[in-house]
Amino acid sequence: MGLCNSSQRRSSNNSIKKKKKKKIGNGSNGNGGFFSGGGVEENELHRIPDRRFINSYSEVACLFTQQGMKGTNQDSMLVWENFSAREDTIFCGVFDGHGPYGHMVSKRVRDSLPLKLCSQWEVNSKSDHKNSMIGSMDLEETASISMDDEWCHSESDENQNLPEMYLPLKQSLLKAFKLMDKDLKLHPIIDCFCSGTTAVTLVKQGRDLLIANVGDSRAVLGMRDKDDSLIAVQLTVDLKPNLPRESARIEQCKGRVFALQDEPEVSRVWLPNNDSPGLAMARAFGDFCLKDFGLISVPDISYRCLTEKDEFIVLATDGVWDVLSNKEVVDIVASAPSRTMAARAVVESAVRAWRLKFPTSKSDDCAVICLYLDQKEVQGEIAEILDPQISATEDIETTTENLRSSDMDGGSVHSPTLQHANTLRSTDEIVPVSESTNEKLPMRSQSTRSLAECISTAEDEEWSALEGYTRVNSLLKVPRFLPGDKRASNRKKWF
Image 1 (cartoon, rainbow, N blue to C red):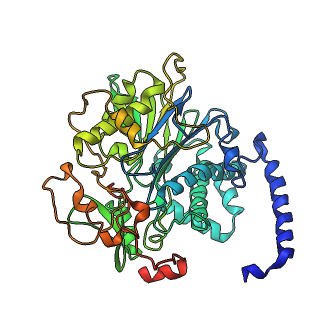
Image 2: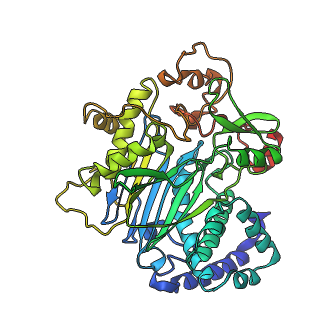
Image 3: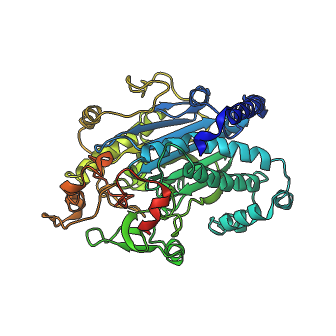
């Protein structure tokens, strides 16, 4: 039917597109439509001067990512200064993809979510009070925001004197996250049925800080206590299925939460009548096979007023937190030779810790952002952290050879006791559950083969996109599809 609409409809569609392009070109804030929330070409987005998404640094932040030992790097990151054409405003985010197309999902969220937030924030900032904003919405949208608020972290709303920017920005974050998930669901190329991503993002404006978190990536603050000692303060909650509130919501929606015998400490989300996919988080973008069964993409939002005691914030994916404690990461950043090297120092320490803690397991992808909260300038004499193979318009995907060579640096590792506050021990990101394994090792920290070896020879062709993955899973088992047919109409049979 779609092929029979002739050229008249095409011509009308072309005229509509031209009109839309003109509107985008006249975007506000003098940014040529970068904050319109859509229609921005990828090459244009990457040319924004204060937007960094590869290994680099600026006067206030440094960021570094390194591919693990399992395949394509599924981690993405972003630092955007002068965000939304607002001075003294910074957007930061790390995104940890999972599933067959997790690398595509994380990059899509990295590129699109900030634009949607810009657009929503611009609209909501024009309203002075919550009542005026809600009054301009239809009933459906008002009900939707109320439902999103139900799952938001609300302690800051009740216990603090909040700045004027808080309410518009909070509602903008809620709406942007919702639109982002809808965008993924309708995406014509990226199959997000069993693929998704985490997202821990922050917006800092002056001394005001808002954090929005989906999944199990984490934000940690390095600050001084009353004795002037450096301490670590965790700013986000790892949204795992074993949290009482999360498990209650999932079970209320007929989803199931339980852990496998091989990994009793890792709770997972399962379909009602099928032992898949076994997602190890309670909130995520994408993963639409579970969206009717309790998985949500509503962010956990919190506010903090920064003080002179607060020195820096670290955003990182679970490849770091699985092997390093909050305090260890804060100490690594504080002891880095310069600010330009801090994020890289954390990643390299995590890689070495993986080799110590899990010598028979492949290390996970790592992505780290270090955001400094004071105004000290970066020293120019420090060597660049950019890998020579990185181009200005491509994401870093470090090769296994580069990873191994970097692992040889540094000699001994100073990590006496690795603490794991609300983190998963490691193993595989995507591994199917099937027959029992032939070998079962006594200690979990020594090996993860009990899950990785579950891939049978007969399943190798179906799982060709996942070849080489031995992570401990965000996603354990993808529901099987009929050969050559992955459409949503045929997916219902898996529920």
